[in-house]
Length: 187
Image 1: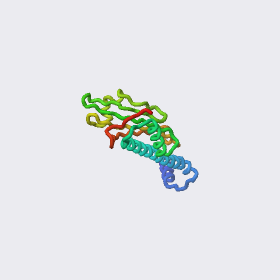
Image 2: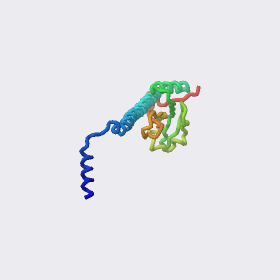
Image 3: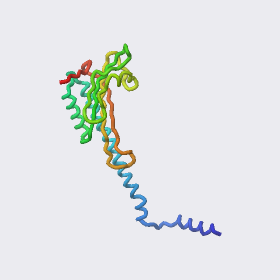
Image 4: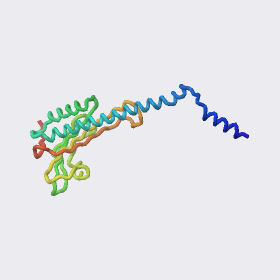
């Protein structure tokens, strides 16, 4: 007895095609706005990361071709080039290090390390890389590698579930190309 009116009501509810646009808008517009904001934010994170990767590769390649001594002025200008390539006013930080491998002791050592820009990076020490076999490439005895690390905080424009500000970090390793070593000279 009671089931007949309930089933009739469910059937009429299922078949009813009348509705209000306001109710549908209340349901769909917040989801639409979130989807637009998320699409924009995800694109911007990718663009931000891509610009920093390109800038890091450019500076690492520039250093790898250097045949003269590298000075503080040279690295200050390299940081300016990095900021120009990234094309924003954000706080970027770079750590440039030259690491040498000694096959006899099977250990790495830092020839020199410099930091440019504000942030948490400090200059690498030999203790930091002595046994860094998992993060540094296989190298021959006496071979050097340039390690360029960059770091930037991505300022999120919308809260779409990314967890606030993101840290965008890149790490580029390259060998000196035209000279056997990259020499640091403090002016």
